[in-house]
Length: 371
Ligand SMILES: Cc1ncc(COP(=O)(O)O)c(C=O)c1O
Image (cartoon, rainbow, N blue to C red; front, side, top):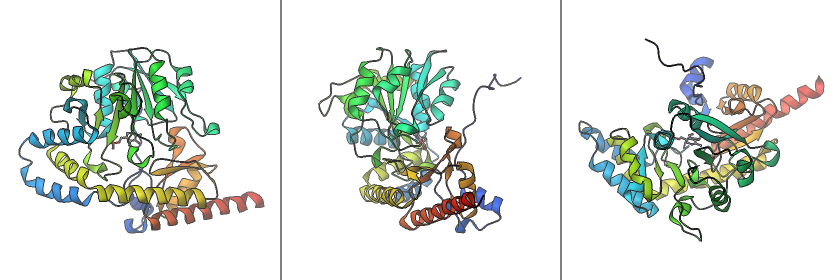
């Protein structure tokens, strides 16, 4: 027996962990900071931590009421019906559910290049194909409807990441609506708002529901996650908001008990913990401003909890930063070999990242001048 032919599947490359890097460098993990995976520098919502501890003794039962309660709390939060909320094992789990619910074998999705790798991986698992639309460094990764429509060829799902990973650029609701209005009826626009809490504009849920001056649409779905603003990345909890008319498809595609008892209890507590979200968003806003003002290389404007920086040789700079104890993301894996992505840290972490990067850039410049 062999697995099916997986040779055209790519393996997901996660950002590197502190322990892993510390072991490799023979260093004490506490001397390193990790700004590579867009995690929350303030940790999990404290209210969620209490809820997780309390829930620990009940995990001998399958999650029933906690699952129902979280769906209901999220439906309230977005003013939608309960069947419009699809709970999942992280936002990644929702990507899988959406593909299971939409793709017939051989159908395609259209995704951004550069962009988040998991859309394509998931489409392949679900016997789909992947086409891309390009976003360009030269025009600041502008997400226009025309750019995507130029590449569109009747794909079943178009993924729009807003804020976009790794650039932090956004696509406004007018442009998303124009995209949806100019694609075939069978095409779904899936808007990934994993970083939505850090952005200024309204969620694309407004387009599903016909709010803020838009007509309601049945061809838009929105991904959200507890991994970023709520600090629960290790728990794996995310969800989608889909149109009411096909929300019940979830019951036919979901993994039984899509989110664990502990995850559901933590999610319920985190949703109430506005203080933690506000603090997290404020920290990210300050860190973005500090990095764009003080880093001596070009920093793209970002509405996420990270910034993309044009450093010239991303691999060399990432390695030098790691040597200096700051782990950042080399964006070569996104096809951006000149760029690194730095997650917004606490004030002191961000200051250390700025200082370290500026020193490395200055050194490279001096060495270039000497050569
Ligand atoms: C754009 C984007 N979408 C979705 C996800 C998935 O997040 P999670 O599965 O942790 O909810 C990520 C994670 O980094 C992301 O960057």
